[in-house]
Amino acid sequence: MTEVTRADFDAVMTPNYAPADMVLVRGSGSKVWDQQGNEYIDFAGGIAVNGLGHAAPELVEALTDQAHRLWHVSNAYATEPSIRLAKQLVAATFAEKVFFANSGGEANEAALKLARRYAVDNYGPEKAEIISFEQGFHGRTFFTVTVGGQAKYSDGFGPKPGMVTHLPFNDLDALGDALSDRVCAIMVEPVQGEGGLVAGDALFIRRLRDLCDEHNALLIFDEIQSGMGRTGELFAYMGYDVTPDILTTAKALGGGIPIGAMLTTAEVGASLVVGTHGSTFGGNPLATAVASRALEIINQPGFLAEVKRKAARLFAGLEELNRSRKLFSEIRGRGLWAGCVLAPEYAGHSKSVVDAALNEGLMGLRAGPDIVRFAPALNIPDEDLDEGLRRFGRALETVRFED
Ligand SMILES: *Cc1c(COP(=O)(O)O)cnc(C)c1O
Image (cartoon, rainbow, N blue to C red; front, side, top):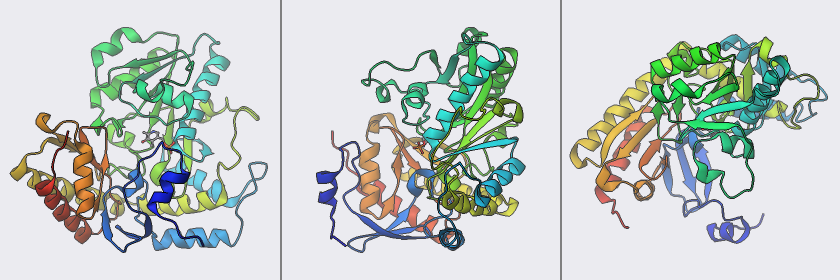
């Protein structure tokens, strides 16, 4: 095989990413190594994807078993792993029907198309407005990025899909006048991830459900980042006691294998009649075999209780570190999902902090310019959690803020 370097990346890749200055070659549990043999503790989790860490033996087994059986046949044929996974998702949630995609954005694209089609089928074509929220993130397809709440991601690509209205998140007053019978769906992350680890207020989320009921609109929960155990619940909606009509999941669903899913009720799902929507790879046997095993492991009371225990350890550790240097005004989040909000005097410098952490051997994430985000594996060993926190502590001592 050809030798490749980090410099080659810039030579051959489109310039839309700016990855860190090394090439990663191996991962095991919550540790990762680069070409030079440097070790990192992984608090990034591939952006909340590697719920069971790297090379989890059960997932390697599920993947290799399936790899020896059947890789791909397309949706012209049914396969066992996808039926099995759909049955598991139906058993574990409110849902009665499942559509498989290959990513979060595609699962949301399916959800939005279904919401529009359901409205056309049941109420007529003028019921097409979609309500979503500022700072929300729903993917990078043109429809989902338009529904997302940061215009800078959808500007500059020509005319956008219409009838999309953005409201401030967690603002009950703003909801008041915005809803009408023209609305076909509200799409919301119950806990905003990219937007900075902002949990929806219980009253706000409840009000969304009530408004949808009043106006015959569908409530779509985007749980692509918040789902699959991240908050300590299998899905965050379970902690709110509010049930959506459509839920999307991806990221940790496949534990690192690309897969997305849209879950819904039989009544709503009925609008996806033969030919209305599809995907060549969606429900691919390799992906669904791995996701099936991941879901089996994560959806256990004992496993989810451990997520909550580790989360308390992570938050206590972060609060302790912040007591001396007070870089952060707030450390917030849910479960094993933390957002460290830079104090006003350090605002805009989350990249400096994440870079300093990497220098100390800790992989972390940003959520915009002001927030350092952590989403470690849900099964991260306590000793790796503690070592990661020690490395973060050293990073906080050494970080320099350049303008
Ligand atoms: C990551 C994410 C998406 C997009 O998922 P992709 O797999 O990148 O398409 C959508 N919604 C939320 C809440 C996400 O965190």
